[in-house]
Length: 372
Image (tube, rainbow, N blue to C red; front, side, top):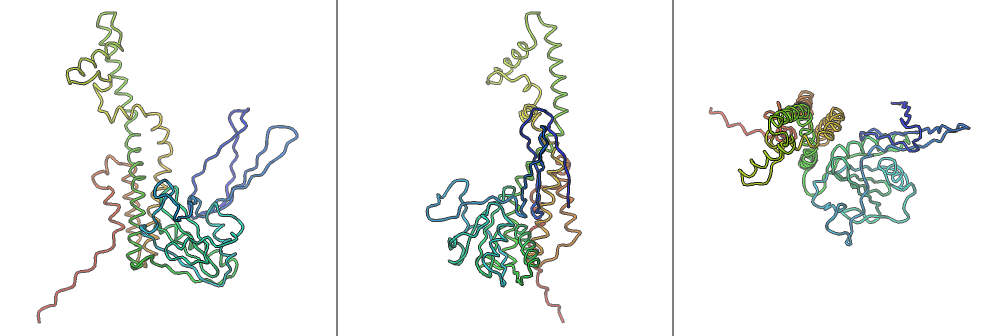
């Protein structure tokens, strides 16, 4: 799809302009910015930005013996519930490198002079390897390739699904025959690995879902809390006006808070503590930030619902199980209700109810033989 957007700075003296996008992985493309300054003679500068299919992935340093066992870039790859997609065919290592350069960011255009394999997870010595972390979900991706073989390994099955679709399209455009297969990493089966990976990814997404629930709940309280605060402040002002003229509203409220605080063996109270619990006071203090964040809440909810729903569908496809439309719709409805109406859906939808969609089906109990 194509889109044309015209942006003009509100300040005529501005010399810098920033535009933010929220990309969806799986939908790569190109953004061209035509910059026309307001000077004579008129000219136009063109800037091109490539959006990769796996654009949310940030490159990590390769693990080796000198890598510190802590820090933001450390990943214990051996303990991740990884599964993989393997592609084989009649392509060269240069073809494979070009495809990897096109699907993930921060890969040099030219093929490195020597293989970069770290022999991690059984990778071959003549292979090239790169490592990534998803900036949104926090999941990881390991790519290793050599002549005639490319392997993607991740605990995020949606990442593998996107890679599979991209590599198939690229090989088809160049008329190169390839074979794709889903593979387990380690001793487990493909089905068990797929279930473990999807549950692991979902657990990484649950804190994001919880954050949106809190924001949704807090945004609905801000106006009411502001009204309560204004009414109580007006009542305190009226009460103070009936006291001797030397007592101001603020000093009267502070004195009242000090008396109550001393009675409870604690320091002077914030006047708001006389009529609001601490969690509501915190909402009032952050009211501006909450209201600003809530303007993006509908799009954020839509984005998270799409990510979780696609994870469910991709998991089913990966392990060869059906993903009934009715179940997908139920999952989508559960997420939307939980995020859009947290105060009403809290008892019905929670983290466990979402995790239940990703649990493997229970094996059928054996039927007891019928008596003759």
